[in-house]
Image (cartoon, rainbow, N blue to C red; front, side, top):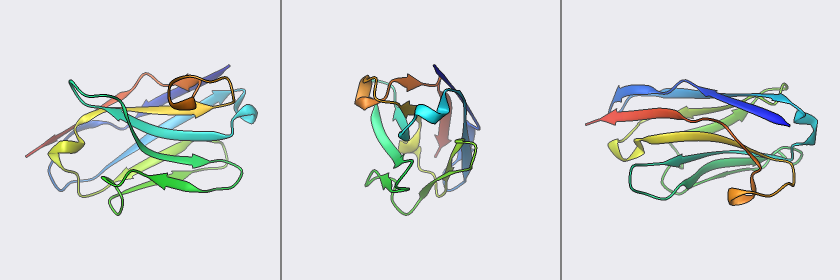
Length: 120
């Protein structure tokens, strides 16, 4: 089992920055991918950014390219630096991790989510 805990959400004004953190614990050696997803009220959960752990490749949704940056540390913790935030970035942000067990978007582990609200 893998446990994921997100932190760093909050209420900010448009144009501000936030840094989300995802602390991973448990059988993290089994993971091959991690990612950030978000879900706004009344909308489907969507991909924000993700990374293949061995290759180090990182993928971003078009809506966040150039503004958000995904990073990791050696302990398999993951971060999302969000700059130039827009009201449309308002959502619950989820950390996800994949070890091959399947699940939504191919991720078998999900955090509880952290709320990001961007005021105009």
